[in-house]
Amino acid sequence: MAEKVLVTREIPEAGLRPLEDFDVTVLSERPPERGEHLEAAQGIDGVLSTLTEKIDAEFMNAAGESLKVIANMAVGYDNVDVATANERDIVVTNTPDVLDETTADTAFMLLLAAARRLGEGERIVRSGNWEAWGPKMLLGPDVWGKKLGIVGFGRIGQALARRARGFDMEILYSGRSRREEAEKEFDARYLKLDAMLGECDFLSLHTPLTEETTHLIGAGELEKMKPEAVLVNTSRGPVVDESALAEALAEGRIFAAGLDVYENEPEVHPKLLELENVVLAPHIGSASFETRDKMAAMAGEDLRAVLRGEQPRNPVNA
Ligand code: DGY
Image (tube, rainbow, N blue to C red; front, side, top):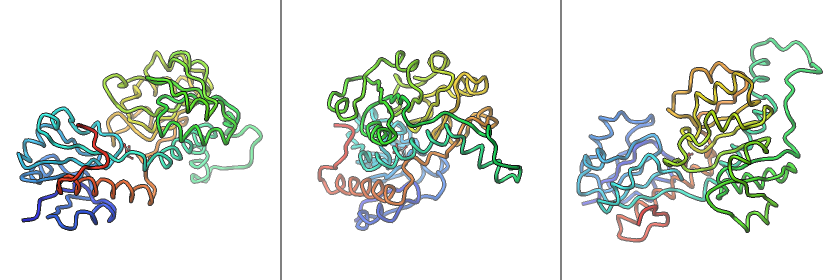
């Protein structure tokens, strides 16, 4: 009998192709209700999940002994309880590398849009209230030639640096370790986060969500940034203390922010929704046709590999 596979959301066809030999249930276009999710888990051999589903002990209990693989269609896997998966010998995989360039595009798009006030401008044009070109209308800081601070100088952080170098930006970075090769490639300078906060004009976050990085940027950190600085977050929402950010933006303690991720998605802090100086995107960091195809295919292929007794390409646990 074919193994049972649960695909929690409708995904690009490229992710379903590798699963053709299995008994596949695709749950829903929207994030499934918890009850529906747990019921569908019963007796499955593998799950292809996305970041909107919690794959925790309760889910693994609902699935039972048969569950062998959790293939998460995202590079981040903070929605998966990897410790419990380890205890149960369940392989967890993610989709690294394929989304680096697209996510860096999104970060740079938000950086430009927040600095040059694209959201505000669009709202003015659409409202019919645009009266005339104005010598002092919607001014913002230049991006080119400024200092960009990157928190987390891994693949996505470096892809962002490559774009920024095209704008003659100076690259500063902070993170757990020095990246000497990348320093040479981008002429980048390593700094402790605290020192970088006060020096950079733009700060972009590219760190996974862990206990250590939760609220990495809070009131104290925002206080250290320049008043003309712009914060960009395409990593995970809880890396930033959203209410502290809303306050800093409202009081003009930093110039603007560009956000793709939020602490309680899809909810957005109500104060942020009222502010003009923040560009809000609905977690679309990797949302290009090409990249979503690659992510789906990678997750599907790894899931198939585990069920076939082969080595998956991207295991995150031993
Ligand atoms: C990821 O892969 O972690 C992204 O947030 C999804 O776009």
